[in-house]
Length: 151
Image (cartoon, rainbow, N blue to C red; front, side, top):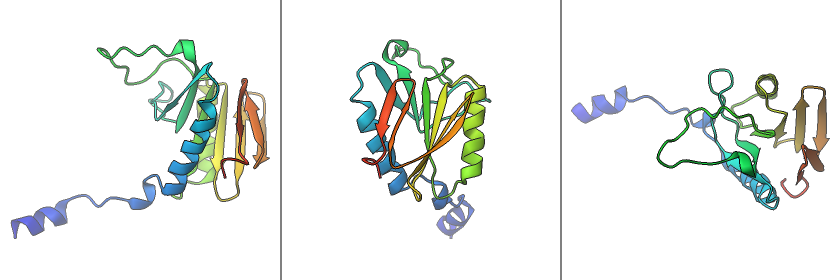
């Protein structure tokens, strides 16, 4: 009886909000290409000190900018990445993710790529423009990913 009441009082997980297989796969394929460039450091799930803490799927920094100290961690990283990459999950809308991209750019991120898996699209947001790509090579800040190899 006690076990039953504990089970019933436990919070129900929202499985749709969790990253999916497609989300994880796309992040991996993008990261594999980013790792070919030895001048950058692509970091997954790093919380940035923007808007009380935003966490892009991948934040890309110049390699020299990343100096971890394993005795003293940083919870909200103050330096802005050259590029932030967001992969839209099934539970997210394009509009809310493009709004997040704008906040990231206003917070100092030079460029944000918002990847929409269903349409094989990449929305590129910077301070000066917004551009849409479909299954092609996207380049920003000297960082290149061939999205025909991602989808």
